[in-house]
Length: 529
Image (cartoon, rainbow, N blue to C red; front, side):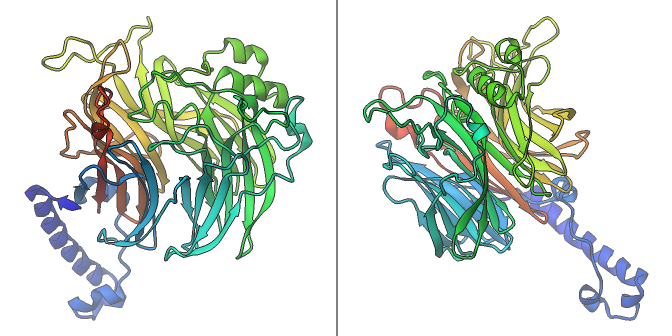
């Protein structure tokens, strides 16, 4: 992997170094503990405040690296103890896909890697305070019970592997009138290179919370005709040091269906979004599960939990059809640390023609969302981008979108559009002490009359302040042209930001004519210090 820094960036680094030396000398004069010490010992005796993320965004050094295709692209990253953990994916020229979980040093040296075995799908991972990790795995060939949890040491050694426990604490009232006593088959429908997977993991101390979407485990299902119905749940687990045990399980949505349109493109995982669940854990141990809100999910929730009315499900503007991919209203359901249901809150921004949420975070009783939206004016008119030279079509004005809502009320505290020169979207979100850190793509063009993209994306990295009043954007000198360069995961430790994604990724029609070799991609890594 090769990294690049502009001469201007290097020059700013020298200025910062000299400035820091001057500030350190001044701090020695002001602090009595350092007053008599020689200048070179000030670092040992003075307490210098850490560099803020704000400062890093304003004056930090941004570098990026790419790997050629076919290769490993990044889906998610987490930083812990100076290490960078990345869930990576690959697609070869024959269409075959696989995944691996990798640990890198701060210098991007590979420390260890664990690759999925044949017929395994790595769906998600999380890092615990101890530095140990939990990896979610689906055994694709399993007819039921195919969701596994793998506990790993910081060195990548397997400490335990077990199937996700059968839900023994599920309240009977969660089942409604149309689900079996054990409704979760623990089997998914779609597995591909960019699929998030239907098993989501989030650390809660050394314990774990998982959210999952699953086929309904129908007792009388014919082997050659699997049930089209789905059900989603959330489970809290405790870690004994050797295995996980269930603490509580709740149903999120009852029996429903999701059928995203087959023609919808999936370059930025639009088609993935209706199916997957999003998961976040608050500081008080409370749990939030988010997902696209369609009529059948809404009706299931209304009939079983009375979260919303049936009329709202059938006529409300904050509900989509089970096939919709462009307009995807969102809903989140919150649970207390003990698993008590706190309510479901649908959400869609005002005056939008299209809307998709790609990531979610929770902090201090609030829920943050990141995604994309196409706005329209009071008359319902969309103000399209002008076509780029050589094009004869108007281009859809997607803008990156962030919002913060109350966990228990769903009330909107603020929303902010993160807009570039052309289309934008935000794929990944981390809630820091200084605001919302987001990553995604910018500068692409999508034809206003369909889903085809005609100009590739470049990466987008931004920091939105806690009140939404200020947005800092880091520009990356990568223009997609006929391929995409975009980010799918981001994290921060201290003032060190890492974002991962795909380089030279395919656009809408790259694989036309059975050119599978054009559907491959490489990896993209951004670092900001």
